[in-house]
Image 1: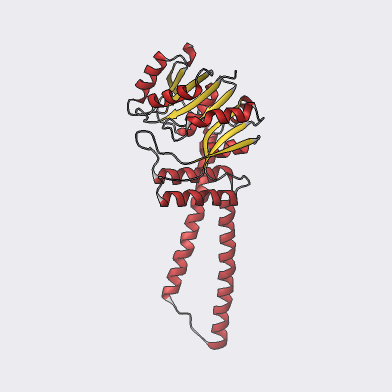
Image 2: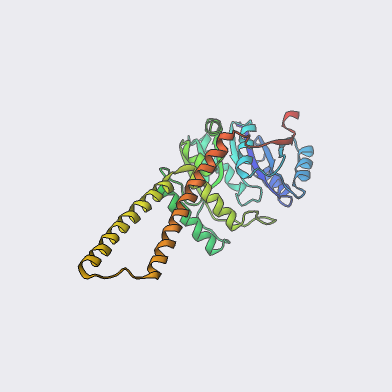
Length: 309
């Protein structure tokens, strides 16, 4: 039977890791599996509880970072250290239901798919504002990017070794896994499920954190915002030239003096705002280029038990 490696990023998940292991054991039964918990610089008791699980359960491995590097780095570290023929990425809070695992594995082993990925069909339990901006992100991303993200797509998926090896070849520092999973291609079966609340604890994702993550995804996979800045500049220049012709014509034909202090101030503020926005967009891309050229490691491991087994 194929060994399933389950990669589980953890940040302050002390209340969920033990429950997560019990659920996986219940679903997997006698099927061979390993769980790789990645402690992403947790400030609570997550690491101690993971180490206790590793001491009592041979299938549990762990990697602990020297600090919080982010979920994307944790996913990369887990994929890099997974040894299974099939590799799964899922969250520890059980919002990714383990009950889907048999169907996902069957999609690959029996139906010939390379990836079996879960997508949420509902957003029950989320605030209306968060749901609105989430749907807006998918529409905007798909419109301005050459790729097509499936709405409701999650990081929860089972992949073949070939797919994971392809993802690991993408060693960029600024990572957006949903985009990377889509970029490498391969045949994917989408498995729908309804949104599930956390089994315990509180989410570490804030609204602004999700907004920032969305911006990272857009910047990572499209240069359309740079083109928008150029387009805005061209349109405003044309309008300004036409307006200038109108003012000159009015003065020559009707001796109409130039008036309108309020109009001038509004125009200056509008142009200034657009210029600052364009510089900000350019600066964001320059920032990503700057970080990539440093070639810093994606993560730093403080301790692990993987070499001990």
